[in-house]
Length: 211
Image (cartoon, rainbow, N blue to C red; front, side, top):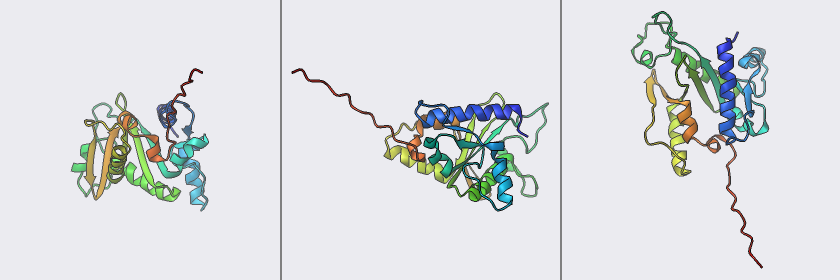
């Protein structure tokens, strides 16, 4: 069962995603999926597919379907140390690097990513995004390094504002290349049309000539 904290963040993120995707026009393009994707998982076990119900985000407006048809989005909330206890269930970039291979439990970010990739294949989508937000921290998005490099090329070709300096982490672990970047930074330079969204065309105002 989803915690109240997790459900609240899913709703907040869906509004942010909607506003970014629609250039501020709507805040209801996307919303939480039924049972946070659980319905699609249950039906998959029976050999049945469920349209636009995989992951944690679904399009409730037609304008948002190009994103949800191509991208599997998983949202995570919490995972902060309590009472000084540490373990692989806490989010840590360094856990990806220094966890011994003999450990049966994988670092949580790697577990999330591998699970998202598995579900992405089940849903027939092209790419995966894992978005997480720790308590009192900034939300971050995890994607493949290959896709991030493609987005950078797109931003240059489309003359989009790609900030020259921004926080990010590029990690390679067990043959998996991951890029972690704050969600706000991602929204600030990546344009929706790179992921299938509509391109905004600015119309020139007609100047009336005096007769």
